[in-house]
Length: 490
Image (cartoon, rainbow, N blue to C red; front, side):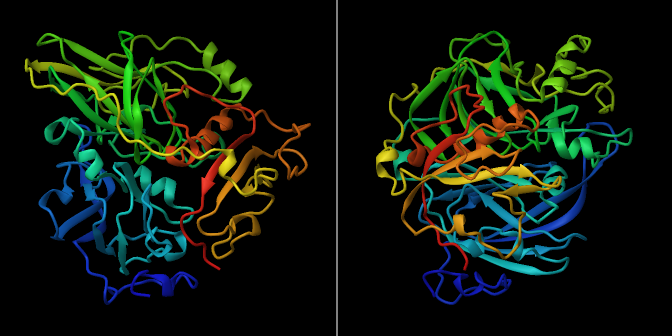
């Protein structure tokens, strides 16, 4: 049991509040969850948030990097192979637990809702960093509270490096920066306002103010060289179409917790909630004083037809410059008017060249080689595991069953180390377990189809042979190959 910290607790949901004997940690931290007030809108009233405070007890000094004056949690910098122990205490008035989104860790340290802490309780996370180099993030993961707690601040970025990445000549240090994109709505007192109505629950919350690294109207002063920006979509529901205002192509070197095999350059990149993309932004050749604006470009097909027609038919809200509001009635104090629809065009952040330099690395031709898994590698190629997503009645279900905290359904049980073919589809008519027949009736789910892209194309490229650089918006049932890498509870 010493080799698998937390295994004794996995079957029962029992909380681990003591360090495991024999687990020799290279990194130790204290994480405290609390209510706080921070200045999100400069010059205005402070905003009440929920916040992670952290203290490094053991390990490299750069393991924790605080974003000062910010509601987001600190950046966690890990090295593959490190053993990590985190002492977590909930000092908030709500239950909560942390999920390390993208890290391959034991179930007990993955932040399953069954381990949620009540106010005042403590927990000990223990895991070895097994990921290759890439970007992940962490967030609250309590059942029925995840969306709201993430909205109010409980999230942060994780950066993992390894020996292979260290051999690459890519931006590091001050040229390797976080880029957490979120949308929020403020009331007149500068407080976050989260929609709880049925419309918001069905369609998803969309804020009217865009924040980057926890702040609005962000401008990055940059040198005339290449940067690595670790972009995370930390929004609850909004999907971004990232592209430059002048049409310059944009380059990615990594997606969802791993580097790409080689850099990918596209006119734009789609980024759904929870997805990450490592952007190579090169300002070489640009003159001092020049500015570039990163936009979310317009797109269609992300909403049901009637809502899409209403969105496209609405009156123009005028220009949306970086200096003022970013939507109708949305001034610097964060108004409630207008709003930004799913698929609208709006600026995210601007970049201004402030210094001319000549030390920029060249874009590598190759990044992280890996063996691509294909359908030939799966052991169920003739019978994919079906996962039908439905709402019955008004509650999300998988294969006709609602979530149960301690239940693992038969289709979720797979052999450790096996490679499975899974078919994910929408079931809004009679249950079709094979997923091959088109539903006869039911709502048009084109918008939700895009969210399947997170489930299907968002898995590691090592497993699927796909990445998030292609501007896809699939509407048909999708299949992927997935390797089972961690045991399930029984």
